[in-house]
Image (cartoon, rainbow, N blue to C red; front, side, top):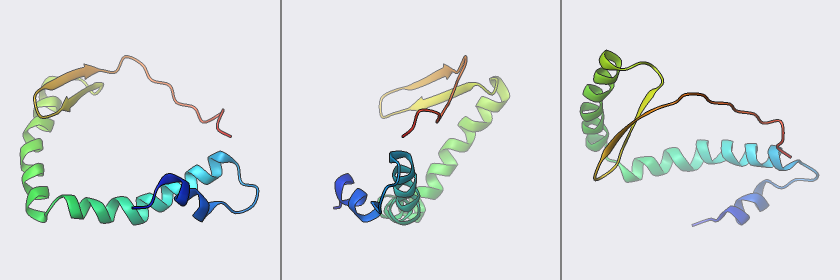
Length: 94
């Protein structure tokens, strides 16, 4: 398994900013690593059954909640949360 330091060595070319390198690495991982490995973790049947299970929850949210409500589900509980406000900036990336 390749670690973050090795990935940075692959992409470090000259005087890129931290933000430029991080963005390039993220794009590489998204294209080459995440998609490949997600298929390893979930079979086609598991993906289908996952969709079958979550569709009713998504419908319930749309029928009963407003768009700022999210659900987090793990192996022992489910939590409804409301996003009151959000702010995102990349102004301070180097």
